Length: 171
Image (cartoon, rainbow, N blue to C red):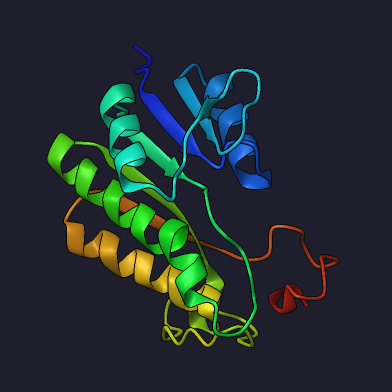
């Protein structure tokens, strides 16, 4: 008695999103991958546009949303440019899930604890010290406030210990 659920995966062409799609499809679920650019088998959507997002959600009507879409940038004074995808998109998804009985899986980051924290854990306080970390922290707060069923996964650098220099947590 396998349960098949309809899953919408944003950022489906990215490193994490493509892996999520592959695993979900392999498990027999009905997966709708979303990308900002046209690609075979993907749904295209402007995730920075609230109307486009609501239309997408109302058309697909997923049981589960796996939000891997993000603007990743560790620049200074860039929160406004991160806001549409990193903060507003998860807030909209949380509200939609609350209203429609969906479940939201939010790909977040351990930099909500601060970019220089060496060994973050469940007792480490949230102290985002970059605009990227702040944007992901705000997303988590908005999801919590929506009252939807959700989980935020605070992922470390996805490239492992030998990853790029800007992923200081890998070291």
